[in-house]
Amino acid sequence: MKNRHGFTLVEVLVVIGILGMISLFLTQIYLDYINLYRRENTAIDLNLANQTVLNNLSNDILVAVAVVPSYTVSGLNFTSGSQTLILSLPAFDAQKQIISGVYDTVVYYLATSTPRKLIKRVVSAPTSSRTSQTKALNSDVSFLDFTYNATSTADAKSIITTLVTSRAIAGRAPAVTSTLQAVLRNK
Image 1 (tube, rainbow, N blue to C red):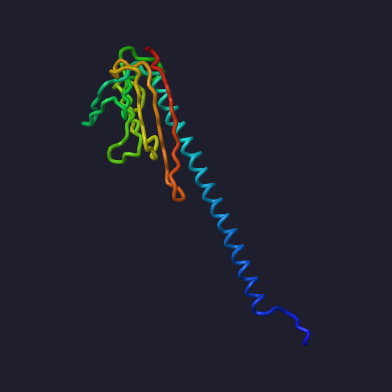
Image 2: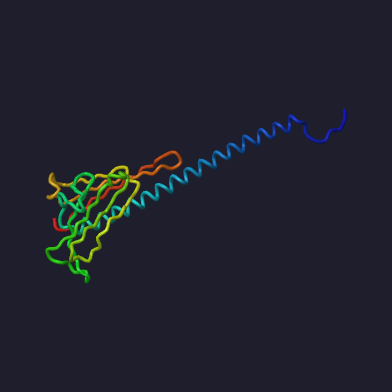
C-alpha cells in the first residue's frame, strides 16, 4: 500500500458538515442573545418612560386643588374618567407667587387619532406665568386607567393611575405596568 498524505473527500465533507452545524448552533445562540438584549433594553426604556409620566402626574396631582369633571378647550370637550384626568392647579405669577382665585387647567388624556399616545395639555389662565402647551408624554401606551376614590370625580381626594406600555421588539411586545397613587393637596 502506498503511503498517503492528506484527507479523503469523505473526511473533508464530514469535517465541513460538523463545522457547519457548530456555526449554525453558535449563530442561533448569538441571535437569541441579541434579541434578549434588545427586549431587556426596551423594557428598561419603557420603565423609564413610565416613571417620567408618573412623576409628571404626581407633581400635578399634589399641587392640584381639584379634579375638574369636564372642560372644553379649542372646541375639544374633555370629561374626567378612566382615561382622562382634568386638574385645576393654582396659577402663579412671574415671581412664582400663587395668584389668589386664579387657576390653570391640566388635562391628561389618550389621543383619539393615535390611541397609544398619552397627551398632557396645559391651559394657562391669562394672568398666569405657567406656559400653555400640549405635548405627548408617551407614545407606547397600551392601557391607561385613572381610578378615583369617589363616585363623582369632583369629590375625588386621591387618584390611582395605572399605566401599561408596550413596544414590539424582536417579534414580541413586552409590557410594563406602573401604578401611582397620589392625593390632592387640599383634600
